[in-house]
Image (cartoon, rainbow over all chains, first blue to last red; front, top):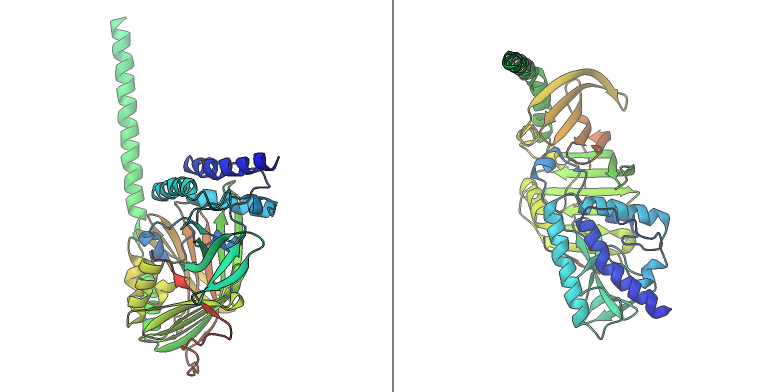
Length: 167
Length: 253
């Protein structure tokens, strides 16, 4: 049963970005969350906040959709909406879509490479908007990391948004 | 048989000509309505010039930002903020709201972005003037200051870039202050600005409608209080990390 769930989570990890690429609402099960924090949807493409910003608007980088069994258990309807918002924003420009495609293929490669990491672990270098549940801070060489079930994350600002980069 | 076809062709041709003529008329009418009313330009220019001439000021603001969900549903986020500016090279912007509590400080040499609740901050060297710093923040770090256009000394040129139409809508009262209400159109955006009447033509409200996103979401910023003689102290433009605060990086764009 557990292995089936894990396999399902893994398949969804690969399949969901594809759905976003197609600009189709994934209608993912409500139990699957991609972006659990509201601030993840702001600062993405985007209601511009300056008139000049509209004309000068450039492509925003995309916070990679992450799905894992840990997050799946923490999902709510509200986060499903936010996820939909992210999907909307991700489909806003073709450039972003191709960026997603690159990140997604990187995800697939790295997932194959990192066999020693926990199953369903996000790709190294992936950027997520929120940490999964049950993380513990850990300091290495004076830098604070979050240890989330064996996967390490480091906080960073992406634009105005606090995000976490998978190590 | 043959003449009937001919008549039909002629009828179709004359219809085409009529439609073409109507289209031309409509285009002409449109061309007439397009353009920016001189009075709208004049009121806006007076305001941006006035603000460019202010060496120190604070503006307390109330912001609303609409986000369109995939379903088409609009969600509105609210925040309040205080912007403190000292030309040519100091800025502090604080905002508190639904999404995040954040402080942005520019001291003329570096800029710092801090989330006090999460006790984290990032700092990076920045250009030496407000204008260059705002460009740097937007192009290199993806940080956009809400309504930051207004802070530029050449705000008028920035705002009017690409504008095709502009009118004076009329009089309006914003936060109890009598204003001129202006409305402008550009290819991807409609925007409206309310400018205080009298000797201090301060912008009181700005609404930006984004036309190239589904359901045309809006961003609105209302200035609840202007202070043109603020008292700044050494702390205003200096970032001091709180106890236990962790420094993080800006992800390169």
